[in-house]
Amino acid sequence: MGWDELRLLDALAYLEGFMALVTFVALSSVGSAYGRYSSQFPGLQVPARPAWFLQELPSMAWPLYECARPAAARLGILPNRVLLAMFLIHYVQRTLVFPALIRGGKATPFFSFAAAVLFCTVNGYMQSRYLSQFAVYAEDWVARPCFLTGFALWLIGMVINVHSDHILRNLRKPGETGYKIPRGGLFEYVSAANYLGEIMEWCGFALASWSLQATVFAVFTFSTLFTRARQHHQWYHEKFEDYPKSRKILIPFVL
Image (cartoon, rainbow, N blue to C red; front, side, top):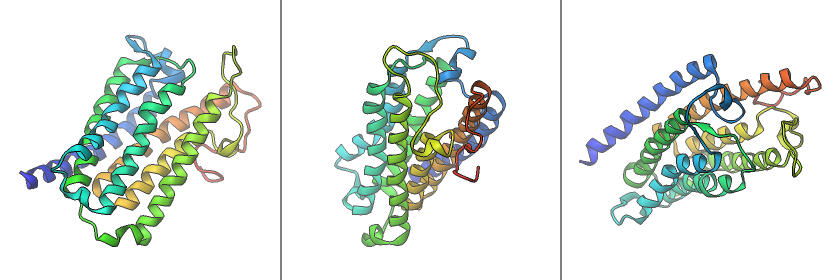
């Protein structure tokens, strides 16, 4: 049974990698269907707060479930516990904290919401089961350069992501509507500092875990967020004549 499930986890990883390519092509062609662009996609809409909570919930629930199971064989190993905690910390913030802080927020088209629920369910299962049942690390893995570099990248990325979300939430004063140019933090250098932070998080997680499952997750994150960042960048330039010309899309001074 264990060998069969490991093959399933590998198959899901390859499927996620394929879907990363499909997502990149699709979003490059038609654009994202939530947030400021959701009005372009008619049909059933899910309010912002419940949409964020429900779509992120599976990725928080899976690691919690694995931690509660006495049969989580690999969670007795420190590297496995730390890596699963890294995954869980992000999704606790995304599931419980981020939705509670939303001010207004655009409704999400049901298709995008359903796709996010499906992804978080499958990816949450894949990452949690791999780390709790199958990933094998030496006890000193957490002291090796690969892990330490990845952990540092994950931590810096999370700080950038949370700080950038804070900047975006506070662009409008009470009673104001409409969009403004983000200022401060890495928004002085890129149009999508929040996405840069999240991409850094999962690239760091992939480096720290050194696994197929985490690597395809990082690839999927990049394929999704880069296309949306490029869409934001173009939108800002079209909407604001005074938008800073020196800002890049996602990587300061480079891209």
